[in-house]
Length: 152
Length: 152
DNA sequence: GTAGAATTGATAATCATTCTCATTACGGTG
DNA sequence: CACCGTAATGAGAATGATTATCAATTCTAC
Image (cartoon, rainbow over all chains, first blue to last red; front, side):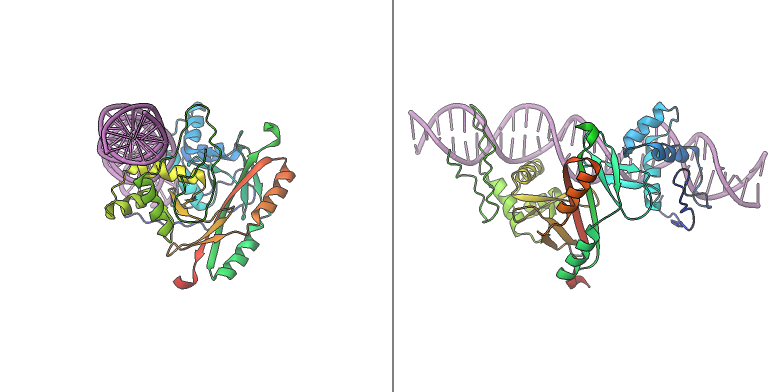
């Protein structure tokens, strides 16, 4: 697929009810069983899942979805903003269906539980730093990890 | 044991790794040409280099250092705290010779210039968040990126 | 229905990184 | 200075995650 009309339209579908707010359905993105199964699994999971883990779960759930398809849809959904990508220290990328808006994650290193952090103080720091060093369009990326109460 | 030998030139980072109390056998870190070449290259670079880039540079500089050796030493040096690992959005890990102490990086997305940020406000936030959610041993990881003054 | 394009799936291909193991060289010693 | 024990190196194989390939399947619209 090289010369594909990549029209990343995402006009609507930013509905608030996070339960069944599956994106797509416009005209370019088809609503396939696989994509729904993938999103459904993520929407119900409490922790972030890697592509491989998700693939495993889907296989166990009788929804035999190919690994390549899992990767494809995960990437797409992340681009559309429907799910959130989290980088694990080990290198893999895990995904999770998150609420909207800017936020970070606090992940338990043992059980993988995730807490969304919406009160980001980094933005202020970032702004100050940017001004201080003459930088523009500064973005930040951050992850917190620790051991949750249950795991101690 | 006067651990005098492993003082890789380049002042700073006097991280006296005294955490090698192996009984019986002594696993000394030897000073090899390759390791010196690797560190030297990093100490002079202004931007962070990935293992592959470093390997390429060393090859070009007639210091034929094997790729595996580059990886090995990079990992070791990072553990010792002599160099700093930076995760690129694309996934590879890049390394840079940094000052000691906890700090983060502000990288120019265009030219790759790096600024060390030593006044990290995330620690406070992190602590508060940890207490709030009952987490323990919370660590954080963060990167800032933007466009530097020269590149605008 | 039917056509036609987006999508899927099995597998090959990448890419960065790690492992293996025979060979080399560092560093102290006699 | 020659010698030894051992950490370190190097070339390539192995791994693990992710991406590309491409014929065979669905969706969706008509």
